[in-house]
Structure formats: structure tokens, C-alpha cells
Image (cartoon, rainbow, N blue to C red; front, side, top):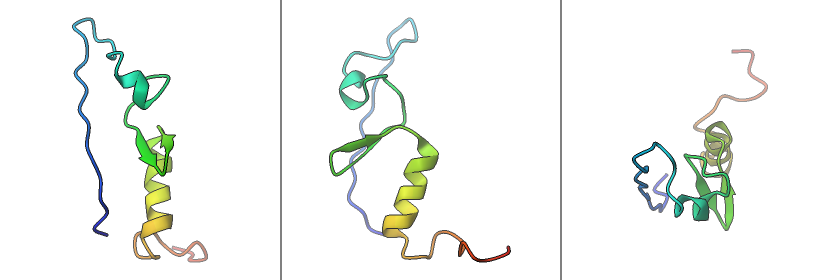
Length: 68
């Protein structure tokens, strides 16, 4: 699909808490998060579905009408 993307890594605090800068990515500090055109998604299944629908051109998921 040749999509442009950027990966950001966050180090957890010694007490296994999310660092404060992660709150900039998601208010509840959930991971993974993906930003699409200014909207942040934190549900990985929803992210995959969005990528399939927007950029897959029907190649990455089965036809919804298919019985298989």
C-alpha cells in the first residue's frame, strides 16, 4: 500500500505506568493508537478495519457478500 507513517516509542515508568507524554497521543494513555487526519483511534481492530476499507481497494478483506 506504500502508506507514509511514523512510529513513536514510549518508555513506561519504573512503576509500570504510562509516561505523561503518552497522554498527548491519547487522553486515557491507551496503546496502540493511530492518528488519521487529526483523529486518534485506540482500538486496534478498528484501526485495521479502517486501513482495509480506505486503502485496501478490496484486496485485504473478503467480500461481505461471500459465504466463505
